[in-house]
Image (cartoon, rainbow, N blue to C red; front, top):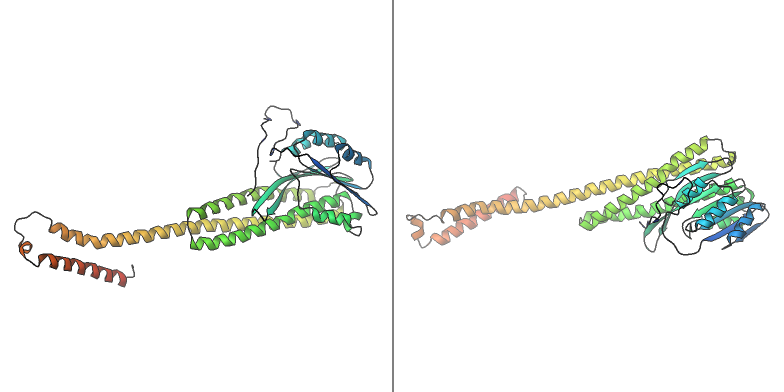
Length: 355
């Protein structure tokens, strides 16, 4: 799994609540701000705008979607928070990229923390980043760790004048963002499922240490995925039961559908964990069976040599009067007897299907 998380060297211990400290992967690229401003009759799209231009959109009409790619510039986050009256505790959570998924409802906005999964088909690995969404009366702010996401389809819908999204409010835009994120979980899980299927086939042919390492790796990935998705179940249940003025009744119905998708995602993850546990049991069984086969061979070899060792031991005794030692046929007769014993025991083992 391509989850590379590097903590900030700044220690937050002892700092006052609301102190803005970035805790995430170190980055040097410039923070990029993208803006969509639209309603039923027009839309405006601007990329790589300055902070001052982004702040000016607060006073404009229509729905505003301001997306920030990159959280390492604290001043940008603080300025946007001040302009849109975002609580300092929320800004603190935005900058903590290892935060647990949650939703906080305030008087003027709703704050979501959710994990964004994407599958890198070239590297064949999962990329995970934290996404923060702030829903206001006529705006949506999204904060991403880096550039690149799964929202291209949403952008195309905004550009399309006949799209239903253009005629609805900011709450519907927030729902669409959440829906795309959750739906993309299935894309990632489908790829994991294909990998598990191939791994199961390899496990039947090979029980090497490499297979065990792969199983352990996937197991850790599924634990992390479950930790990232499981809190969403409670989040949406509480959101659907609550009375939040920013979500219209019509949008609540759509959020129920997202909640159903989350339930399916959790069920899929749990079924994958059961498969992984079964693969671990299969691996251990294969190792034990292979060990039993080795022990069986060694036991048969030892059993064959017991009577031969007994005969050799008798004639290795230093007694003076052993008549057969004086016989010219003593040595070949002894070898023949020993060979007959070996053949007889092999025939017996074969008959008993021990070989």
